[in-house]
Length: 240
Image 1 (spheres, rainbow, N blue to C red):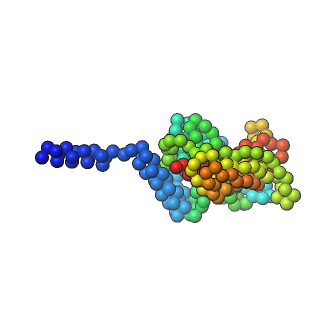
Image 2: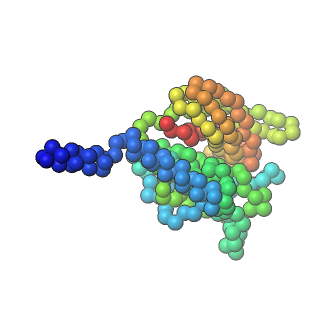
Image 3: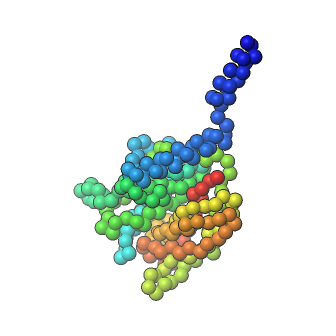
């Protein structure tokens, strides 16, 4: 009888114990479900993130459209993935001209893929309606997934400006997956600064990138990057 009780206690203990691997898988599944909910019913941010701060927002306009740039900072000691990010553009009467809360939006337009610990990142949305020409605000929401383990290494190299007679200046370069994790829907965020002022921004998408593979990208800007310093970030979207 005692051995039966001991086995029962052991089984209960094992059932209540969650390994680090199981926890990571559970958190990743929860994040994916959250993204699907955002896509189906639209983004809803009901609580601000404690880890991610919005440091600044910039709204850029030119003949090609409107782009939003949100500067995020992770104040925690852990990388955060799939950070919900709600943006609004309002006119002087506080009427909403644009919000990224509509159903069916790509995950990259309603969340930041990754913000590393104690670091800053620029997130770009260049899919705003061309009529959205008011003031931009942004809120980083709770519900981001803490990252367990090593982060896949994805790098951009050879970034430079090229002048296309039909499309204007673009930032071109190569993105390389230096990890053993296949990547999907990588977003290249490009921001051009003159001094500390953001004067142009844009993004490009690399649909798939196998381990060790490279791909060329071209980012077409909203705003004028001529003579500005261009920085590019490509956060991994698949972490394991």
